[in-house]
Length: 418
Image 1 (cartoon, rainbow, N blue to C red):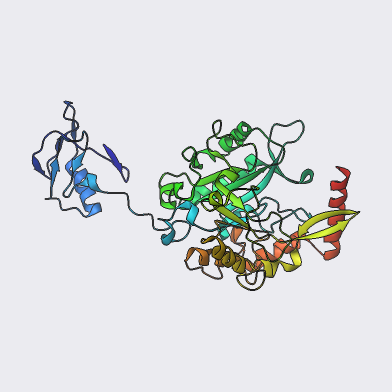
Image 2 (cartoon, rainbow, N blue to C red):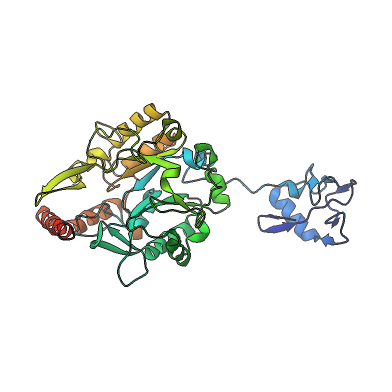
């Protein structure tokens, strides 16, 4: 018995006699007296849907129980091809490891007047615009078992619970069934891996997560996007520290599956060298996915301390599709160096660049597909691109003076905590 487009189809192995398509009684198993009757109407409906000749014959066999060798049979039908995977038909037959995706660095950290923010637009806008990788830090807080999403410290920027954030992402997954994404978490407080089960379960995220075979860390071990979509295992979840795949098989240790270029880069040349994990043998790095960290930072000295801040004045060039120091040029350099594009293109403030959506143009070119310019950014709740962008900027800083004042206050909090 098989399920084809919601219909139960019975198959048999009773005899080797050729029977006409319109024969209605078929033995389910040669060792069973059970018979299955399929009404004329049902057969005719299926035949009409799938364009099968109703006078065709099928051949039964006793070689394999519950199977038939077909000439023209309903049982030989396959599920229809998925038309698009992550927006492009060309990507469906590619392995997950062979599709470049843009990552929102610190995706949840969108807070007006807070220097710890790394994005202008919230997660639903991010996903609608084309972000397919979500990163963030996880923290614990006193007097609660909930995992919170905080940047550096929950005293500086706390955007709420992991469960709440995941619930929002799940709402998007439900309405976008042909999309595959990844969630990459930083375990800032060494949270036990089993503590992540509750928020992933309560948010409704758990049914969507992908669980690989043990030790399937190489490029070829990953399934195609088509496969992940068909089985609805469309979310790859990683943890940078403390993962235990024997206890939580779907919570993957990030650096077993991928490596990264220099973290928190301050060099606008963005060298495409392997940085994390440290001292990994070259032959291992060559057979794993990798992330291009392309979020340029500036070193600022405040109160005698060096801190890193996003290089906001250079965003339009950093996130550009071409030019010195651009994301586009860095992807080309990495591709030449490693023989394949980066899997992940990590950026701050993804909607900035030499045009809105330039980061997605770069990913599309790496994948060899077309990008529709003008389809970005910030269309959540019906807002146009320009309106969404302007509101994001104005929400974050009403003036440069206000931004600097917020920066000073945040830095003082960091120093007070030691």
